[in-house]
Length: 99
Length: 99
DNA sequence: GGGGAATATAACCAACTAGTTATGCTTGGC
DNA sequence: GCCAAGCATAACTAGTTGGTTATATTCCCC
Image (cartoon, rainbow over all chains, first blue to last red; front, side, top):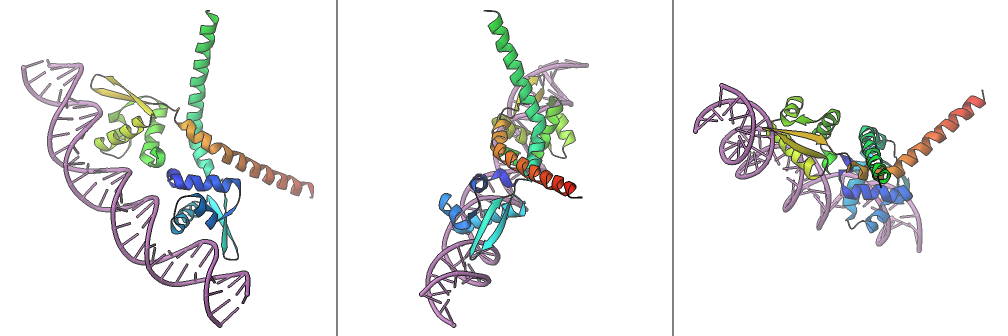
């Protein structure tokens, strides 16, 4: 899974703020330039980022669409923990009631 | 990351339906029993499942709370793709308008 | 047009992962 | 009490991954 790697999540978080050239990312992460380029390749092949060239620079930006798959996978679990919170709330309300 | 492994996501999906003993999971996944036990250990240590013993059986069930971290991480991206959908909708509306 | 800036790719390596087989430990039923 | 069922752990292994250094490529600027 592409998002398993913390550096890659970090890269996405940085690109979420704004489009950035590779050098910027290298400066922010404590990583070599080739390492960053490799992560960007993985992200690009997963459709999570896209590039455009400006002179020698490559400007990367986020493409959030593929994250919908994860969001969809998460949906039923989200329901589950919402129910548990409701149960907790009900419990707390009941305790309140009994004082 | 714990959820990087497809078999582990599958296990969670199975446990989402209902509590299950290990043997059940082994039957559903095409995996050896030790492999399943190892995945369950990883999931347990991540707080994503919990066990209770019934005779020789170990019944596993989902504990969805840790998934909130992922959900939280996902939140800003969710906003982003919602905006893009809005933009698309606006575009389609505009096309509709001009016919 | 030559040099340096910015990035990608190649080649390599250590560490981690997910699987396997073999074995150990509890527990219930006979 | 003993055996088999059910599961965990141990020991090992092949494949993947994430990093490194070295090198290739492309483009601006003087």
